[in-house]
Image (tube, rainbow, N blue to C red; front, side, top):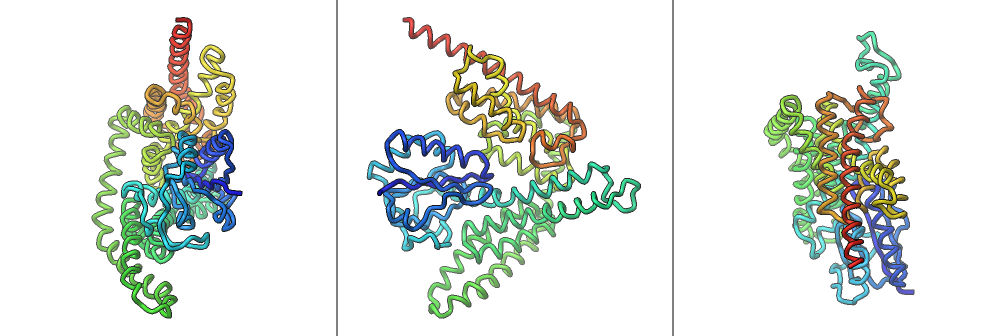
Length: 471
């Protein structure tokens, strides 16, 4: 039986991935069409699409912000959109793919075993969209290392801030072990980030050069900025080298992919990073110094900026920019910045949860109140995306309320000099926070302001709607 295939994936693989899956399934069910959705989540690929599925497909919807091996669908009508479109425009996507007007994806291969980078296939994606997907591929693969390493390091502080120092009275052997393990995991986040950016662009040979470039970025102090440069340089360099070597006989294929390409890639990217590492490190240090000075001299302005960024797109690229900056500073030992970022990310779902509880039947439907209860759990575990369904219904009014709420929480966190040494986890990492109850208070204050504003907005909208109906 013919059916639609879909693939969803977001950088973190936590919320957007499965929200898009649910939206596409619901839209297909309403249209009376069979659909199979492959999810590329944090735990890996679920419900994987097979060769048999591809043979019986009438078209494919790819709603992803990361590389999901789209080349396997060459020869089929394919729509490629951001994951947020899979959530908000599911009905439209189903209608488009069944209309018969979607162009065929070009390429020479149509196999699930193909590992060629998506950037090598001619498509309609803009350059900016491609760059974003490659960048998010690096972020999504880096995050598990950041979270695992960061939390282990943070746990070591339970025995004291100097518990890993054998020359200090606070020294604890188990705490020192946690610090060592966490430090190793945390230490390779830039090479992982860089390697997977390169892999997304140029495949496995590029990953080798990218990983080495990331290691050198770490060694020279170039950090994330150097990692981004090395990742993109390695990816596109390997695409260029591959094109040059395509004229070699097929008998040289093994030599080309295992010896020639990695050798050229590692040397060129390694040499380039050693030359550029110093200047990039200088830029990094200047940025770090600016943020730290702003943190102490003008915490209100910094909190407003961070809060607005985190709630602007609920886990999207602007949110990720703030989060990655917090992670970078966390690696430098600055725990204040992450406290503000985490607070700002936790607030939006609590705005929904508090508002649906306080105003209940006056402003929200039964379905919305049920979703509000779920947002208590999402907020407590640092999953910002729980606010998306509510924001999507009225983005021009709801998003500014969320941005204001997050900014209030972030500003209060900076003013209160709160430190959060873990990069994720929400209230699960409260034992690691230096002022846990005050931090929760800052978050709840911002969330309550937003909850009241949202509730009043919904009551006003409901009254206007009722007035129109009576007329």
